[in-house]
Structures are given as structure tokens and as C-alpha cells.
Length: 151
Length: 420
Image (cartoon, rainbow over all chains, first blue to last red; front, side):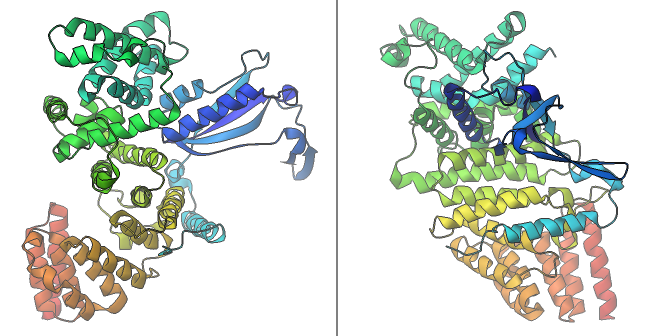
């Protein structure tokens, strides 16, 4: 199963969190382990929410909110995508994530399984799957597809 | 099941390969290494629920296993030469202080590769290689493997212990093969991974999730191998092939569990993430600029299908060219049959009939119902309906399931009617 693991922290502390060099070091080793175990599919870090923006739709009104998102309880700082055999396995890997022991603020990993077309069952209107497949093909065309017989 | 017990089991699946690999380097015997690792696993089952899960579970298992190794060596050294040798080994004396200084990333990678090559050693029968690989590198239990391969657990247990004994008696070294035999040994490893994948791929019904899990496990093993041997194009080729084939999982069975042929699959159900991963792996394989191997060629064929919006829009010329290359590299009647199908769509029925020529008389294909099915289809398109009916009836006789038999008989009847 494919899961997304979101790295979260309390918004109020976002700018105060400056990882120590040893945490960077440990994180690199941890990422290497994930890759070696064959479970890592993707991952990236995000800039602080001070550089982010939100767009909010409500009652037909559209508004733009500039970061930092101080009113949010948690903000996402990065994510991984893992292919694991069970939620238990994802949990066990997440447990091993390096963290700052001296930090007073909680560091949170949220693990969420990917939804698949099957989860939507018959709720998907006719033709949606086909259109999504066509879009995926187009994305491949735009962003590098493997040329055949290149060798 | 308690939380601690579940943790032990999931930690085992994660840690087993590296644990066994590191131990095998120390004791130079994969079977013994696996037993020591098992001992540590049992100790964890006893202690963790009582005392809590240790901070670094992998290191705990390693330290425990090394202690067990020393105990056993002390006990056995008086009556066994092997243990006497091990007792003299300084690397074991330092046991307990895990991770030991020699456990560098490179050493661990090397151990893991050695374990893969040992589990897939040609001295073992093919089915033993598969079982041992899943056991040592997948962290699967004997029961899980037995269930996946539909054999009684006792049979599988024997298969594994016999394999471990064979490795010991043949004195198979725990090492990565030398350059001169690497290609051949690697192809044995890839074969095992692909066998595991196909075992999972063949499973279709909803209740055999253990079997379908095998396909995922094979892909994970493929990714591990790709990390360990990034310069080997066929490793990426196999990974690409598995991902592209697995991308069709959601589309290949109908609501009643019936098999849906490639031509009739709803391509909207194909898993685009797996396709993207497969195409990327294929690119890594071809970028190494070495002659394309059989897995890479098959992946390239699967990629042509993956890119085609519909069956009719498939680039059949490209597929024929790739099958030409595959038939040269690994000639087989099944490859020839698939090539003929591609020729049918690229150049029409007469060319396909010519391509079928030798395959039709191949005794190895006598019980292969798809040959008759294709032959019948080609004849019918040429307007030779009576011959088509005959070919389809013969195919029906050797069809593996009643459903496929019924479908072939239906087509045979239609051909007979057309023949008047």
C-alpha cells in the first residue's frame, strides 16, 4: 500500500525550529535506510508557511491569506511517499524518524494511505477515469517519457 | 494480538534481511545465521511485551543474536570444527556492542547482496531459491510462504531446511560473485524475483491477498536490488517490467472475476503511478547504453502498450521490432507466438500466418491453448473459416479452465457457421 507521511509542526513554532546539524545528518541516514529498504517512492521538504499563501472559497467569496499560517494548529513542513506492506510497517518506519529530543514543541508525523479509484467505486461519473488516464499520459509527454530504443 | 507482539513481527519483516546478512558474514553459514536471527526474534517476543520495545529494535536484535552466537559457539566448539574456527574469530569477540565498527553502510550493502546471491545460488532447485529468498530477504514466515504457494507448511519447511543443508554441504561461499560469473548469477537472482512476481500476478481472486502481496514483495526486492546494483541494466529492466505489468492489475479482471484480455481492458483503470515508475526504470535501463537484455526488451514492449491510448492506437511496428530482438536473444515458441500476434496487428493475417509457421509444429506448444486461439483467429480473418473452426476446437480441448473452453467453443461454432 502507498502512504503519504506528512511532517508537521505547530505553526507558532515554525520559524523557531532550526534543525541542528546532527538532525540533518541523522535525517540523511534515515532517508538512505528508507531507500535501501525499497519503500521510498518520493519525498521533499517545503519552505516555511511564511512563504506560502492560501486561497479560501466560502459562500461564493474568494479570499487570499498570506503566510505565515499562525492561526493553524499544525503546518506541513515536508512529506514522504512510501510503499509499505501495512500501516503497522509504516508506523514502525515512522517511529524511527530522527527528531530533536530537547525540543519542547511536538514534532508530528501523520501517515495517510492513498485513495485508489476503487475507493470511489461507482461514485465516479462516467468517463472520469478515462479522462484522468489521458491527462496522466499527457503529463508523461510533457515531463519526460522514457524514449524507446535509446540505447 | 498485543501491540508489542505486532511490533515484534513488523520489526522482524524490516530487520530480518540485514540481521541475517550481517550474521551470515560472521558465522559464514546462512542456515546458522537464520537460526540465530530466529532465536533473537523469539527472545524479542518474550521480552518486548513485558519490558517494552527497545529504542533501537534492530540493534537490539543484532546484539541478542550475536550473544546467542557466542553461547552456541562456546557450547559446540568442543565437538565441531566449524565452531572451533568461529570461536577463534576476533570479529565475534566484540559481539554485543552493536552496531559493530565493521558495520559500515558499504559492508551492510555487501552483506545484503551476498545474502541475495546465496539464496538464489544455482546449486539449489528453483523452488528452493524462491522459498529461501522470501524467507531470508522478505522476512516472510514459513506459513505465509506456504499459503502463498499453496503447499502445506510442513512441505515448505522441509524445502527450506533442505536448501540450507545443501548450501552448507556444497560449501557455497557467502559472497558476491566475481566479475566472470556475475552475469550468470545475476540472471538467476532476477529469475527468482520474477518468479515471485508472477506467482502474485497469476493470483486473481479477492481472497488470496497473500498471493497478490507477492507481486508487491517482488517489486520491493527489485527496488532493493536496483539500489545495490545501479549499474546493471537488467535490474532496472526487470523493475520496469514488473511495474508496467502490475499497472494493469486493476483492469484485468471483470466484476465476475473473469480474465479480461489486453485488447478489452479499460485503460482508465491502469495505475498511472506504476506506469510512471515503470517508464522511469526503463529509462534508467536504456540509459546505461548496454545491449538490451530480455527483461528490458519485455519492459519496452509493455511500455508501448502503456503509452497507447487505445488498443487500436498501439504502435504495433515498434512491438514487432522489439519481439524480433527478443526472439533473437531468447528464442522460444511463446515469444514467437506473441511476435505473430504483433505481426497480425501490424501487417495483417497473411503475414501473421507465415510468422506462425514453425510454432504450429512445435511439440512444446501442443498443450498451449492460446496458440490454437491465435491460429483460429488468423485463419478466420483470411476467410478460411472451416480450418479456423478446426483450430479453435483443438484449442478448446486443451483450455485450462471451463470458461476459456466455453469461449473457444463459441468462437469455433461461429467459424463453422461462417464456413456454411
